[in-house]
Each structure stands twice: as structure tokens, then as C-alpha cells.
Image (cartoon, rainbow, N blue to C red; front, side, top):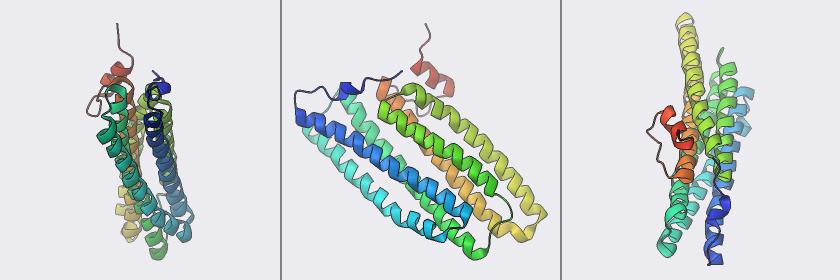
Length: 241
């Protein structure tokens, strides 16, 4: 199910149309910033690139600033326009989405700080393959969630929710393998723990991407699916009978 994007830009007031389109555009820009942070943080860890990691940490303040700016835009729309129906859902979905994107930025900065620490303490003997693999899955989830938001595509959003299950399973497998490795080589514990914290941050980014996808489903069909099963989410997008 793909919602007609023009449904949010049909008002008599041209200024109102501009305001609604602006929060969609700014959300997309913030998402792009968060996506770059995630990708750069993963690469900084894998390449032991301290300079890139430091850039990710510094960029976190820009994501935070965008969250505050978009939130103010949404508050002004609520106060001045008193939106109803799909417009109200759009504003609510954007206010929730920017919170998740801000937290994505926080998790990316956490990975970057761990990359800096890892460079100081010495590289871990294991875990980088897992970081790359899960990082690619999570980055794709975030990109798809942002694309679903931009296109108001509920079907793509459901695919993101599906992908979160895969990330959770891969994360669990990786953590068990790394714990086994640490028990076999206690000297590696502190360095492998840093990798495990990075994997935890990636898993959380996957969760935030899933949240973004769930807001898309709410935006498109008005169903709040945040605490629903995957079957119920699919049913809300593709009703039976």
C-alpha cells in the first residue's frame, strides 16, 4: 500500500502546503545525516580510522540541532493550523521519527567513540566480520525505512519490520560466538567487549529503523502497530477478506 503523497499538499492555503512539505523534506535531510553517521562509524571501526571516528562524534551535534529545529516546525503547525486527519498523522509521525533518528545518531557516535578507544587499546582479535555484516543489514534497514517514509510506502515499511527479525537473530549468534571466544582467550576480553558494545549499538539502530517503519504504517492507514505482532502488522497493510 502506497499513500498518495499529494494528499498532504492539497490545501487552499499555499503556505500550509509549504509547511507540510518542509517537515517532510527536513526529516529526509536529517535521515541522510544519520545514515552517513552510521556508515562512517562502521567504517571507522573496521579501518581503525580515528579521524573519521572523531568526525562522526562531532557530527552528532548537527543531528541533535536538526531534531530541535524540526520539532519546533511541527509545534508551530499544530498551534497555527490545528491539522486534522492525515495531516495530523503526518505531523505526529514526523515528531516521533526525529526522536528515533536522533537516537540513531547517538548510537553511531557511540560506535565512533568505541572505535577511538579500540585504536588506543589495540585491535580486537575477533568480531570485525560480524560488525561489517550486521552493519550492512542495519544500514539497509535504515535506508529502506527512510525511503518508505519519503514515498509513504507501507509495503516497504513491512519489509523493514521483517528485516529487524533477521538482524536480531544475527546479533544473537554473533554475541554467543564472541562470548565463547572470550572464555577461550581471557586476554582478549576488554577488546572483544568493545566489539560487542558496537554490535549492541547496531542492533539498537535496527530497532530505531523498525520504529520508523512502524510510523509509516501509522501514517498510511492510521493503525498504531508499535506493539503488534508481525502478523498483525501485515494484516493492517493487507487486510484479508
